[in-house]
Image 1 (cartoon, rainbow, N blue to C red):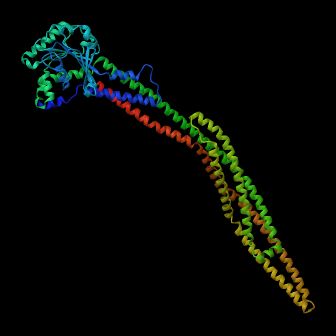
Image 2 (cartoon, rainbow, N blue to C red):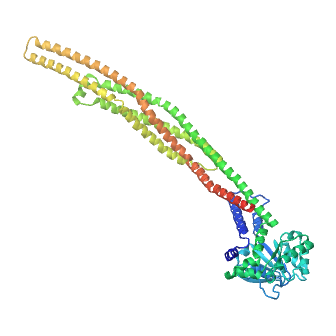
Image 3 (cartoon, helix red, strand yellow):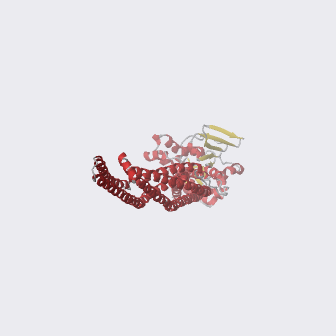
Length: 580
C-alpha cells in the first residue's frame, strides 16, 4: 500500500494531457516556422497567434462551497503544497486566483479579487480559483468567474451536506457547467465508516431532485491526502483519503472539456492543413527543379547535337587537307626529280647528302603547317558559332531557371585555350602520321641502289677516259680511238641509267605518297574528332554554374522534405494519443 501511495504522490495533475498539448503546440510552431521559410501563405481564416493564445490559455479549476467546508484544504491536498491559508476560521474573504509566477507574491485587485503567484511549474497549465463561502453570496459576485471555469468542484462538509446556500448556488449554475462539475464531501476522516455509503447515496438523491442529474460524488479527507503527499511516513493514508479517485476524475475531465477539445482539434487541423499547403509547395518546388533539370539536359543534348553536326561537317572539311597533301606530294616529287639529274645526282653523291630524310622533313613541315592552319581556321569559326549559339542559351536559361549562366567572356577565354590545344594536337598528329607513312625508308633504299649504279657507271667511264689519255700520250695509233669510243658509250649508258631510274623513282615516290594520303587522312580524323569533343566539352562547362545551382536547390530541399515528414509523423502520433 505504501509503495502504491508513494507512486501516486509523484503524479502531477494532468501531466499526460499537458505533455500532449505541449508536443502539439511545439509541432504547430514548427509547422508555422517551416511555412514561413517556404513562403507559404497561411489561410485567411487561420491566425496562428490567436490559435496559440487560445490553446495556451491555462485551465481554470474552481472550488466553491460553504464557509469552512474545506475548500482551501482540498486545493492544497490536490496540489501537494500550501497554496491556500487554512485555519478553523474562514480565511478566504475574496475570490483568490492561484497561478504561476517566477517569485511568490500576492496582489489585491481593487478589493474584488486576489491574485497569488507561485513558482510552481504545474500552475502554468492550470489555475486554481478559491471562492469564498457561498453563504449569502450574490450571483453577481461569482458569475464572471464561473463563465471561464473549466472544472467546478463543489465542496460540502460531511456534517451538513444539505446546506441550503450551497444547493441554491448549484441550482443557479449554467447548464454547460454542470457537465464539468463534481461534488466533494470533505473531512470524511471524521465520519464513521458505516455512514459514508449512506452519505453518498443521500448526495446523489438530493442532486437528482434539485438539478435533475447526479454529478460524481467523492468522499475525501484533504487532511489525510495532504499528509500522505508531504510525509512519506504517512503515505499509507493516500488510499483512505479518497483523493486518488477525485484526481483520476479530474484527469479524465480535463481531457474532455468541450471547448478545450475543440481548441485541440482546431490546432491539430490547422497544423495538418498547413502541412498540406507546405506539401503542395514542396511538390511545386520539386517539380520546378525537375523541369529545370530536364531543360538543362535538353541544352546539353543540343550542345551534343551541335558537336555531332560539327564533327560531320568539319571532318568532311578535312578534304582540303587531303588536297593539300596531294599538292605537296606532287611538289615533293618535282623536288625529288630536280635532285635526280645526272650532274646534281653525282654532286649529291660526292657530298653524301641524305635526300630521303630532307624530303620527309620538308614534307612534314609543309603538311604540319597546313594542318595547323586548317585547325586554327576551323576553331575560329567554331568560336564564332558558339558565341551566336550562347546568346540564345543565356536568354533561355534565365527565362526557364532564373539563374544566370556563365558570361560569354569567360567561356571565350576557355575556348581560346581549347583552340590552341586543338592546333597543337593536330600538329603533333600530323608529324606522327607522316613519320608512320614509311616512305622515307623505301626512297632511301631506291636512292642507295641508284647511287651505286651511277657510281659504277662513272667509274667505268672514268677508266675509259683515263685509258684514252694514256694511250694518246704514248702515241699509239688506234687505242686512243678505241678508249674514246668506249668512254662515249659508257657515258650514254650512264645517262640512260640516270634518266630511267630517276623517272621510275619519281613516279614510284609520287604514287606511294598519294596512296598513303588515305592513311594520313584517317590518322588525323581520330585526333580531330577527339579535339572537337574536348572543345565542346569546354563549351558545355558554361552550364556548370546552372547545374551547380540546381544541385544546391535540390540539396536544400531535402532538409525541408525531412522536416515535413517528421512533423507529419509527429502530429499523427499525437492524433493517435488524443484518440485513445
